[in-house]
Image 1 (tube, helix red, strand yellow):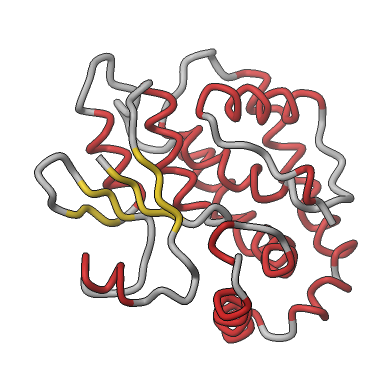
Image 2: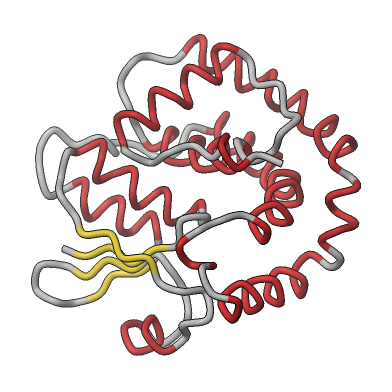
Length: 212
C-alpha cells in the first residue's frame, strides 16, 4: 500500500496514525503542494490523504482510510463513534488551532514545500482561506488565550481516559501535533506526555523543533 500525504496536514496525520497504531507497513509518499496533476489523476481533485490499496484502487478521505486500515487486522481500534465530549472539543478548538498554525506552516520546512513554487502555491491557498497571515501571527497571544480553557478541558479528559487507543485519539492528536509548532503554548505535563506517547507509537514526529 502507498499513502500519499503532506507532512503538515492534520488530516494526513490521521491516516498515518492508524498504520502506526495497527503496526501495518505502508509506503508514505509526500506530494508537492503545487502538484495538482497526481491527486487529480487518482481521485479527480487535489486532496490528500489518498491511500493506494493493494488492488491498485485509490481511497481518499482521512477517516475512510482509518476505518479501512483498521479492519485489515485484529484487534480493531475504531469500534465506536467519536465521543460527544471530544466531538464538542474538536469543533470548539479547530478554528483557533488553524489560525495559530497555518501562518507557521507556510514558513516551516516540510517535504511538500521544498521548492519555491510549491511554497508559493501553499501560501496563496492559505491566504485565500485565512487572509493576511502576518496579521494572524500578530494575534498569537489572543488566540492562545482563546485556546486555554479548551486545553484545560482536554487535560481533565486525558487524566480520566483509559490506556486503549480509539477514534478519539485520531481526532485529538493531529491538532495537538499541529500546535507543537507554536512556540508559546504552555502544554500541561499530561497533554505533553500524551503527545509524546502517540508520536512514539505512530511514528508521526512532533513539530517542536520548528516552533515559532
